[in-house]
Length: 105
Length: 425
Image 1 (cartoon, rainbow over the protein chains, first blue to last red):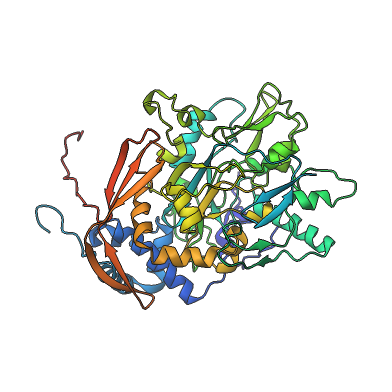
Image 2 (cartoon, rainbow over the protein chains, first blue to last red):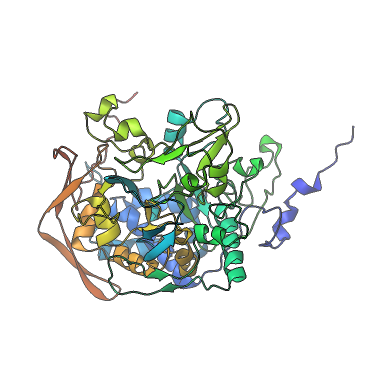
């Protein structure tokens, strides 16, 4: 039997623009936001983790991991140096230095 | 039709029944900023109450991804659309008129139609509340559309899936999660719509229940509840809804030690986003002025937590600390005009608020009263260009019998557990 590729399963959807009124309501519809909103989102997420006592060693890998989509989108758009600077900035503002694990770094 | 006072709308409104208010009201505050949608709450509820045949698609508690997720699908967008049509037909502008610090109208006065008022304008009147009956397939998933598939995964050849994946536009801004359960409304639409009077609100705690003996499964409650938290069970042919874990709430659960306990969904939250309470209600139906009750403090005094879609008019008793980053017009539509002030207060919390935020998930017991012991100033900083100081205060929570059940400081010590620990496998 000849196997035929099913076009609807292929990556063809990559090139298609999202249509907000698509009756098949295919997953997400992007919400337009400005850079200030993006920065506020990033700062809020970092603040919640930092104020909870997370160390850089635990937090930065979350940004790197694509499975943590909310953090990863920040990482993808701005890069690791920007994320690290933001974490450092939040640590300074909230007086939360990077905790050193018991028994040394 | 009787006129009832709705403090969330800052005015009276029509409702099929006259006002009767409980002594206490089951209420809760969710901090959306902290939720990661792990669905532990959903599973805690499901494994307790809805694990039986006929309840497969029944999630009394669910967490949905906004703006496009919903359970049932698009419940809120659909009802907002219906309300919009009603406003256009009536030529009414659904605007809020700002008020000052009026205690009876903390968010201003709503000039639009509630779901009860919109339904009453239909001639002849068909429904007690504007609503619709979701189709079966709309209940098929509690949080459909959550994840966007990134390109390149899964790995080529794995599970026979396409190597390229199915990529969708990347979101510039992360969406937020909305945690939902029955709001045990002050003016429940489900109760208003029931032709059998099978739904009642308990006088002791304001919990809204369906009498399973009286219910005949007409599904008028499913149609009328704007939050779609009344659900039909085909195997028993009656409707069911969240029961607010009443054995825990009554203090009859073996683990409760005779005092009210938080519900399963609240007690299971690992993100510490949930705080449940029983707020004292005054004789006139307003919230009694009890600033030492943590829920009353957050909702009425700090006004940092807001009701979900107050414009529907049911006076829901679930309150949300709105997410800081989502577009403000969207949030104002969802939580009313108090959004901007609430976010400003959460960004730069007052000394008391910072302490009370520590009480979220601090105890399984319902906290009826808190006290704050002042601690030293820890540091000063600037938030939005304004000076702000943190104090290491200690917040103490007390249960119904006045016993201490929680004691936390603002500066919580962090302990890193060593890799080999006492219960390591």
